[in-house]
Length: 88
Image (cartoon, rainbow, N blue to C red; front, side, top):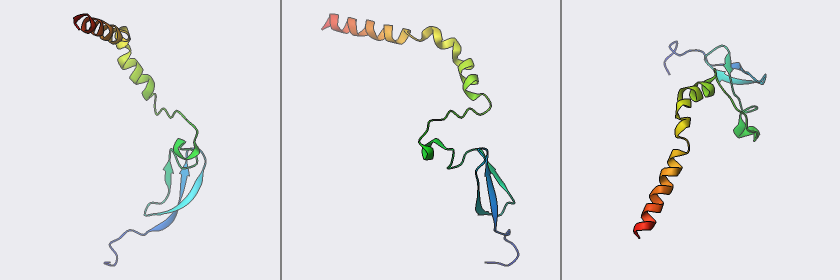
């Protein structure tokens, strides 16, 4: 390895939004994360809705006009099946 061109690798504190802190190695001074192994649903086994900046509401607002078609697909499928049974 060439001397003097690589950043210093040092132990740093990693801080999570849930309050958990642990040490890791990095070239940065301090690392802040939103989700860690103490609060992530995969590791905790608990389901938790993580909505970053209202993304779920924005999605529902964007596609709310499609609610009028909600039952339409089921109706069309039933008509198609009835027609197919009538021909058979």
